[in-house]
Amino acid sequence: MNDLFQLFASLSAGIATTAAFLFAAGLFLSIRMESSPVQEPVERKSIPILFRIFLPFAPNFYPLVNSRLFASPLTETRESLLMAGYDQTLSAERFLALRLLMGAVGIVLTILAVSARQPSAALLCVLIFLLYPSAWLKSLIRKRHLSILKALPNLLDLLTLSVEAGKDFLTALREITARRANDALNEELIRTLHEIQLGKARQTALKEMGLRVRQPDLISVLNAIIQADELGVSIGQLLRIQGDQLRAKRFARAEKLANEAPVKILFPVVLFIFPAVFLILMGPILSQAMKALFNS
Image 1 (cartoon, rainbow, N blue to C red):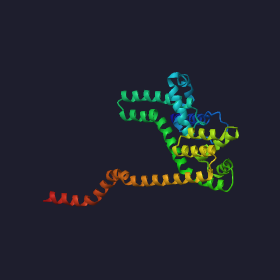
Image 2: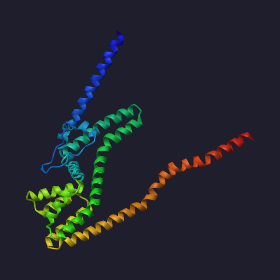
Image 3: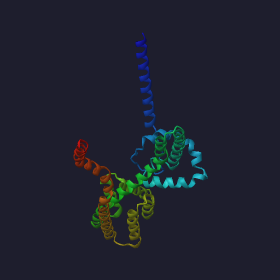
Image 4: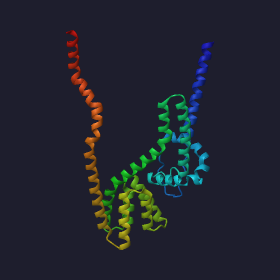
């Protein structure tokens, strides 16, 4: 009878745990991100599961986020989300509220870990709850800028060929973006074209694109296009010059990284490879020397 009762209790506990897990998973999947007022269709971007856990509770911090005390951090967060391309997935208010919530939880857990004399757990809480959100956003910005830097020269080459073949700049840009892969640069170009279609001036839309992305090479190209549009300069020749300059800069950056590789690899080689090689080569010799020393 006791065995039957234990079996029934185990099955009930398993069913309850499974139901709780499915409920939590459904709650995380049902979380919808706030969108910006721009109405162009965009691909929904993923966010870490840790953020999904805390997002339902983030609105509790909205009164604090919208106060004057956090006016500057809110502006910086909005600009960072724009640069990362997540402004249509997470609003600045929601992300800053999420950071405050995770920071409060991290401080409480760190205090509990320190009082329990667990320094490793305290350090882990600091890394996860206090430092991870800002590090995640900075990593997105860095990867997005690098993606734009890699794709920009090829885009300029295609634009140069299309414009020199007699097509209008916007027409050529629209056709190229329709055929390119949906990378970071393509997302920004599609957004800019959509704004122009809604009636915004081309120069204004290009300037706002540069302010939104804040990638130095892209800003240089956009400013050159705007100046050529204002002065009536041939845009085909301008695009060719900009493409050559960006390609030369990309090659110089690749050479710089290649020259830095031997220095960067020196530390892991000395720390991990040299000791293993030393043990393999000198281990038998030292073993025989020790045996001969003790036998004598």
